[in-house]
Length: 471
Image (cartoon, rainbow, N blue to C red; front, side, top):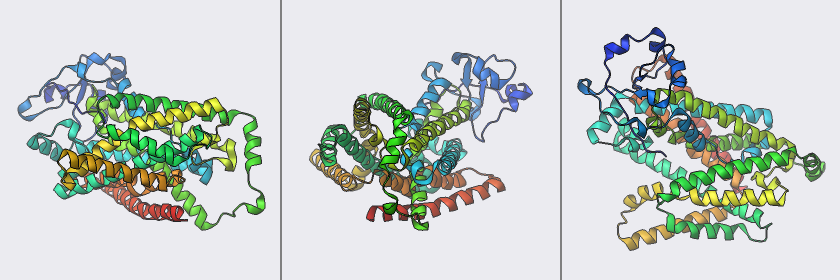
């Protein structure tokens, strides 16, 4: 998560009223700070693209008409913001092709688009909450730095200390489940890398030992984890596309299908489980959406954030859709981890190695906020106590991963249905309804529909994932 920052300059509201009509008509969200191009002429929308970054300045009026100012060099451009957002949204998505194979390409494509749209709406709600008067007043009163104004802070603004505790607990649980998913992914890819000679449990244990010294996420891991993740994502996508385009893949997929007499006949129950599993995987894929609003405050022009994030979300739909469509070439043989379908030894080795490295580097970014939340809760303060707690925490996480080592897709689905749906959709909707006044009747109806759908989906999706794990 990028640190928040704010760069503001003084403007006069009367001067804003004198801008051309097209500038005044530029769509802005309620509570957003005004963003005006300095010395621009003509269309505001086109000037945001045509002007150099130094010519853009974002303005946010404060009390008594005064605003503090920071150098524009501390801000990032629209291109850099797009890269940061895309980096957060795009991942290896090892189980997305499996989800496409479970429900079919057409149904999966529609589900992916719906989930991405809901994630975009949740992002909009969080952004509006950050701009709400109550949030800004609470941040000023308690001297809360912009980088600390995340979902749990918004919950505090809306529902007080109890809201913050509940939200922090949900976020910690989601991060822990994601940590277990990473452990399982490392085990699966380690076994693929060694052609089954080394069991998954051994790789999970080794990764847990490697993780322990960096549980607190040292600063040097922040950049390394992001770079490794992008390299791993790109490499995995390339080897999957390469395998899907090979002419012999179709013959391999056909020959690998089980005989008709042993092929299970789809039932209503199996179709329901497959549908819930696919939706859960797609929701889990967009779990990082809640981390995107801080990027907005890093931008030179915060008004460009909605468009930039929308383009990045659309790009992610195209990317994950392309990954999913590649599953068609493998038929029923597509695995829970699509790297199992890569037959070129060198390509599989490179992809598996990059996944193991990237996930090992990114796991401390999950454990650090978990420890920051849990250590005060268990009242562990001594160095020996902290060390013992970290040992127990690592051992429990690795043991859970070993227990679920053959359920990568199911575990991803369980995390998406039970927790990611809460953080991406339900919690932002509840907070928005409390913090933002004057919500239109149409949007109130939409919020009620989304919250009702989310609650039902959490219950049914969690039940479906539990049934698959037990079964």
